[in-house]
Amino acid sequence: MAGRTFIDRLGSLLRLRRRVLDDDPMRIWAKLAWDVEMFGDLGMLYPDERARLRCSAVQICVTAWRLRVWTEQELARRSGWKNRLSGDDVQKRLTIAVPQQILCDAVADVARRAYWRDGIWPDDLLRMEWGSGGWILSYPPLGISVPMLAFLRIEQSWRAFLESEGLVPAPRKVAGHR
Image (tube, rainbow, N blue to C red):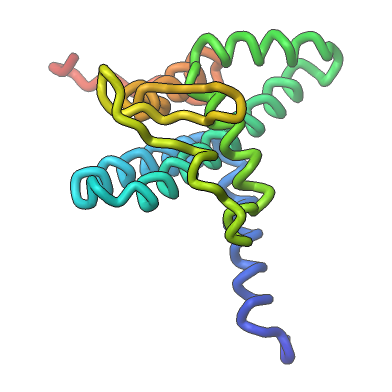
């Protein structure tokens, strides 16, 4: 492997990590839960640094997008790839179960195109504003707004959806605990 640069090796490791992560919905969900926790920590430690919080929210959106893609592919595979309408049905069930996903898909689409990497990510693309019920995360190009508290429940919404679809096991009950 002589002649491979550090960037080449790093790229290979990241692709391997992504393949491993993408094959297991619990790992993707755990990353989503971790991203949400990191956002909460950043919010407590640096409440005035909106740029950091926006970047963290974008990371949540990208992870949620990856989980959606995996879920749709897995459900299509399980149904035998026969019925294209089943994909629409999955999308409807997902929209009801995880309403925050609409915002995440829009934000992840822009993030995946790497506009922000080139310094083209305008501040008004993903906004954090104070509203009557607290912080609101919004994506003005599509007119989508989600209260921050609802946005941060995305991991719980996803876990419930994955369990309802039989894609992950329900947590085990421990004797003596509810």
